[in-house]
Amino acid sequence: MSERYRGVLAGAVSGILAGIIMGIVSMLVSYRTGMGLLLPLHMVAATFYGVGALVDGAGVAAIGLIIHLVVSAFFGVVFALLTQTNIAQRGPLIRGGLVFAIVIWAIMTFLFLPAVNPTMSSRVALQPTGWFIEHIVFGVVLSFLPNIERILFKSQRREQLLYKRAA
Amino acid sequence: MFKKVGKVGVYLCSMIVLFASWAIAGTQHVSVVRYPLQDEIATKIHETNLLEIEIGRLAAEKGTTSKVRSYGNLLVRDHQFADKRLMKVAQQAGIRLPSLVYKTPGETLQEAENQVLLDQLRAENGTQFDQTFYKAMAKGHQEAIQNLSQAQESLSPQSSLRSYIAETLPILGQHEQLAQSFERGPKS
Image (cartoon, rainbow over all chains, first blue to last red; front, side, top):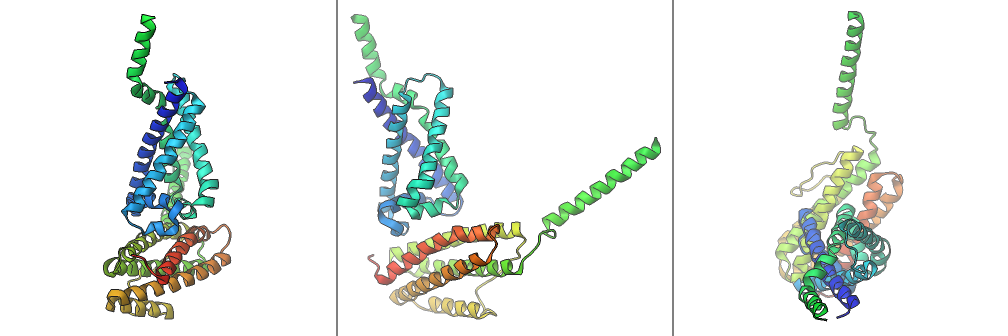
């Protein structure tokens, strides 16, 4: 498996993991403010279902979850390609993750959501701090990309090392 | 020497007394300039929030379809959150909000109309309840949006109540859209 392909795969997995943690934070924030645990998922689903997604059942919430994870995986891959996964120090990676998260937050808040999902756009505007923090969490988790790659391809690396030694 | 210390002491004590009275006045919002128009607008919003919460509760309880019950829950959550935010804005701007309870007919025409609607919704059941609920929500939100848009224009651009209204209007628009879609014909 090529280095690039491994990076992309690790990026997707990191993105999904970061998306799951971001989702949990966002659901907890929503629950704490009395808006209900599943509202963030319904808001994401409004991308395709419009405002009706807010009163639809658990199926629509599940679709919201899938959309969120697909988008998270996409951003994870972009992050992996940008960092090339060979930065060894934690400092630059965390800084990179934070900058990447702020860029995503800005694009989502000012460009993507107002144009594609106005239902979600007007609702996240009511909790701007929580919305920003959720993205920061995403960026921090994403910066663990090399660790995830190491875990994912542990056996493959061992094989490569053995092959090199034998050669 | 003692005279100097005494003078400093008196000066310090008077400063402390002044600061304490300023701090107490600050907590009671005595120093905040109050505008009657802001009070009136905020009271109307508060009144509407309480009415929507009550109607939402009834819909969550008596709605015949899952969508109507979900819509009722959404109304309760959104208007409770909106009212919490309004309380904060009111506190910052020195607006006094009355505590309203929808049990007895109100003094103003709007309150009396609201009471009639609440009594009707409490009395009705089944699909009849749903019909009254959809119509009331579509009409009520349409009126609320019109009134709030007008109120927004009358407030100064720096007013925190104005930005509150600007943030609240899209949510009311969503409620109106949902009510209209139900009026056209709910699918579940």
